[in-house]
Length: 186
Image (cartoon, rainbow, N blue to C red; front, side):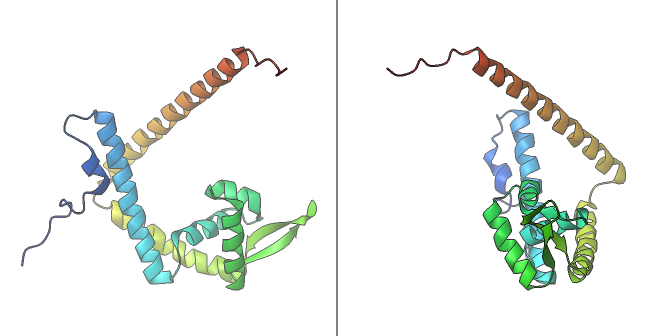
């Protein structure tokens, strides 16, 4: 019985886009994306099989776990980088399941603050513990020193990208301010 190699042509995915003559930065980007996609796919599969929950619901509950004082829907949508409509739908579903509750916002009774229920907190803590063990397992092929180095290198990459973005934003704002405004139509 022959076994397919772990990254045969069918499984290589995003990295297959890189050619031998492509820049090293492009190859690195595709490898990062491929690793992220592989991990995310596995975590999605395990969350569904073990807990019957989607990754988006898990992420939603994780944000509320990190903010025990609760979050308004607009803040939660910013944290999750999704639309308010997505948050409303998820909230309705999770509220029906008894995992989330809406409370009136103290400063604005028209707005709601979302919080985990006691059951939601207990169920999320169980999921989070298993989630963490899955991540540890998936990263176990790297030595501890290599994980530490990779973490530091990726931190440096994030900072340099953020600095470049800030510089580009500043330059774009300066260009916009320097451009003469269009004359009014007559």
